[in-house]
Length: 258
Image (cartoon, rainbow, N blue to C red; front, side):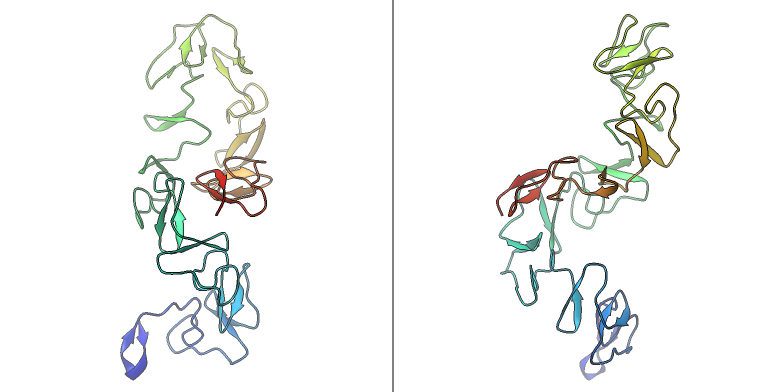
């Protein structure tokens, strides 16, 4: 809260307000802008200088795709284009289309953020289980392959019988899995057997295509050496190496027309 006109208290964005940059009454020079709470001569972090502010033209409805290109009432700015409504099951939260079933910052509704280390699953915050795994007790397991949770939590296979596709069976693994101990595992995705039996990844890593890789924040996936949001990234729409055509948007992992 900073003093506004007539010295009345008013809410300001100290991260971008050149008259209150980083704090109340901290004024930037005429040739500077306020970016990330600092007076600078150029915009950083991929932002663009529009007037005396640094903005993200990919999602700013007042500068959508370029300075001064404002969206109409009720529209959102998605990937630098104004959209009349959010599609693909997404909803408008602030100035962005989000998926309330998957977005940990808006889980089940706008502004309902999950705690650190949790993900948003079907609109509810839950312990983070990645790579198609399931929360059983306080652990994430693959119920298709885990002999102690075969097909569901707490379903044990008899000794010497591996779990295959969620069913206890005779020895011998299929579907690209290999037998490690008494369990059939997928060496492409199993962090305890990444690339081969008992080759475990570090606690902060996941197994991606048989190689240990950094664990991405909730709601993102590791693609091309970086963490991306496959629900909305047109270069990785719905999965790694699935790029949308030029001019298309990615909404809930599906490419489509604006």
